[in-house]
Image: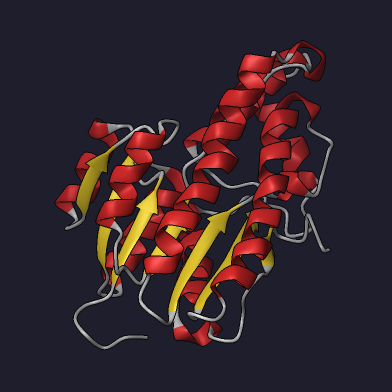
Length: 248
């Protein structure tokens, strides 16, 4: 890692959930963080915690360019931005498919492409995939799962492309995490299945060997490990963080 100045990092999807927890953990570790999200109100807490903030819609290539320009010579990039479509697999439209892929996969590809080659040597990127990339039981989120599978390929490709710099690129695959997105999934999927959200939540936790959901802060701990020099010999990996829900 370069010792010229403080470490600098970018976190997308920083207004809530795992992205917010990752940004706060990085600040706690002494990193100067640019918190990126389309939700200006949600970024207020990050600004209060000492982050710089940038409001952008990552679906727009011109808006991604703004992030890339701010990211010149940074040390860390955490791609946590993502959206989910909860809909029966037989009813998904082309437009809906493209919107999910644009935010969840296209944005990550081009941020890695634009920022990775300009990161300081010794830097690291962490992309947020999901256990949904390896499981297919929740077919109501099939578009989301497909985009998260794409992220695994993107991660491996950029791990090779940026290794000589060297910049490491890894992904995490969280399982069930207590976030606003998870709440939305429980509410919508439970209705589709004729269950209450509490009933579905209990049923889902029973599929997890450790018997519970993770917290965003736990996921942020794994992200920080992958960014840190403790993981200096890891690149191109997809780390399950699922309480045993996924073991491959």
